[in-house]
Length: 176
Image 1: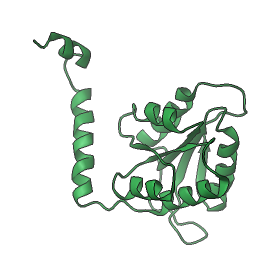
Image 2: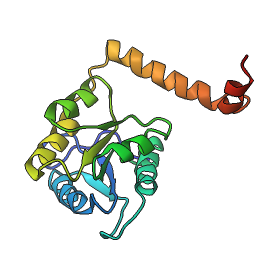
Image 3: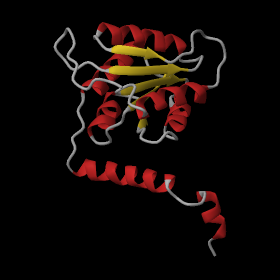
């Protein structure tokens, strides 16, 4: 389990951050790992360990599960576009993954959506922009207020879907 109130050597809130990529995102992942460590965060490298061809869902599920199970405060995923990782991560209950492409989407994914997994493109974003986005995403608080109500509706839908007595696919096919 993660500790909730850690303060880093530079005076800001530090976190446990799980990070993963596919082969196309490997080099960007390595740079982000160093950046996060330099900020004083504890980083869980969920792989891969090299640039050999891999399937992105495997790493998306590992990072998303670590966030869902509260082994990490947040997660970061990198693939060619960030889209595939986002689709896979959002299949894990309790995960709110957002594919961000600039500072504004990084900020708003936190401020209004309480995103707990950041999905980035290795092919379309520059190194300086990625670092700026990661910093903004980590430092931006969730606004709560009316946005909390919306997150609660998403969580309620997830909970209801998990407790259906029969699979949703059967419910959909038996309706007349």
